[in-house]
Image (cartoon, rainbow, N blue to C red; front, side, top):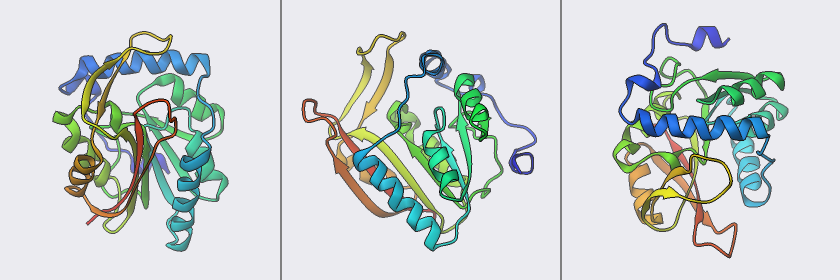
Length: 221
């Protein structure tokens, strides 16, 4: 299946602007994958995923791409629900974890996904755009939206609530990661450039910090 979806040729991440930032993120997430730090999401995130699964079921959409899949925890949920899930991630350790779980995982850049346009019935991308700087946001979203067919739903989850870009120095893995946070209004407007906004929800998972989660469902026009 995946062989039919892949482009014959595609640029690698090192061909793109921002390669130093991408390389830093890969270094971080390779270490995270080796340490097995990812855990199944619960609460609001899991509830939104269940609702998205219900939407896919009602619309009989079968092939879902998980962009920035990590080790595939959400991909597993889609497959367990009866869908065909494909994980896309830059970190080789995460792709190995997908394969170890019996899932389909493909290594590739968010900005140049190695799939033909319109390959998927739906797309899912959680906490990936938070690492995309403002000057690359439109390129990232255009690439994600191109993966699905017209009218298809695309779920985007990211962190925000206020405007800030920079390196956030927390955690014990190095290098520290780059984050780009956006106010709810600005995030809505940026996303609306790339599709029809069907829903836009926000919540604060941890009351002790100002970061809020933004969960958006778009439709490709």
